[in-house]
Length: 164
Image (cartoon, rainbow, N blue to C red):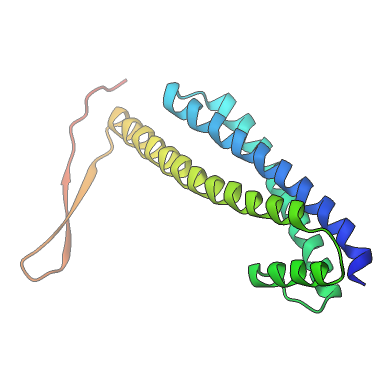
């Protein structure tokens, strides 16, 4: 059975690698947009592109799970290694696919790191924007502190800077 599924697996991995590389590029574009200026329209366009790529990568994962299921293997990293061993045992050439898989895992790890970094940047910008709006609207800020007994308390302070 692996002789029939392996060519499909090779193509799936190659396609997933290309998708992951595109996602990596989009995450870098997003990082640049966040660093340079707050370009909401560009960031929204990038977010839509990233979402589409993630959907396609999820489809890859589902297809890979089906391939592994034909060999009665679960969908995890250990099973991929076992799948490649079985393919080698069946006399199939696996070096290129193993290399592509390793590169895919590397790009995915880099994407995860970039995504976390970008998410933190977006969160910081969001909190800054919300606080700026609160200041302009004259909403009080609450500073959370702890009393001597360890219970939380909020000190309310506010200065209206501008009123329309």
